[in-house]
Amino acid sequence: MRKLQVDILGLSTSPHTNGAYALILYEVEGKRKLPIIIGGFEAQAIALKLENIKPPRPFTHDLFKNIADAFHLHVNEIIIDELHNETFYAKVICEVNGEVHEIDARPSDAIAIAVRFNAPLFVTEEIMDEAGIKEEQKEEGEEEAVPEAEEIVIPAVSPDTLLNELQLSLNQAVSNENYEEAAKLRDEISRMKKGS
Image 1: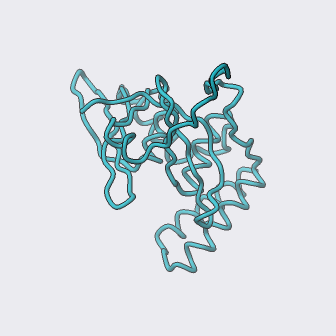
Image 2: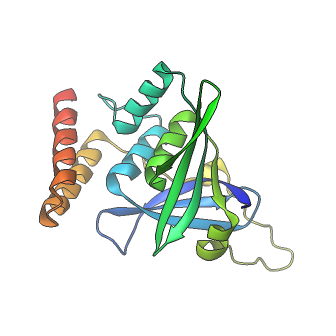
């Protein structure tokens, strides 16, 4: 299994799914991009960390980082290694006391953890071949566009915007009868309102 290093190019709202975002990864030493559809909560968790916005109370991924630090657990890397029925699967490769563990995760959660640990992101070549999008070829003489930090567009998230996004996700979870997710969103909204 050959793995390719990727980085985050940006997040954008997905026109195809309500309340979801497209997380765009780009091949560090290549020309392909990999879009992954993720939920609003996970998108906000990634965006907040990339924008260095600290929420009033730790989100789930921040809590994981705090626990990992307390127990000297280090996240070595994240690898997106499977794709079945348009669903991506990832592994968090971590190490504690010299022992390496592979932990199954959703890519959105794994990436939210990776940005907190500054861990490298990888995608298998098979997945990039299957789901990656190749950049358009440039005409002869044109310069090739290379993703740079200035090109990464991740909207700054104000607390009001985050609350609105969470409220929309809560309404959608209730209408879909996903009460477990609705309860988590409700609790997060309550924590944010108390902290402001």
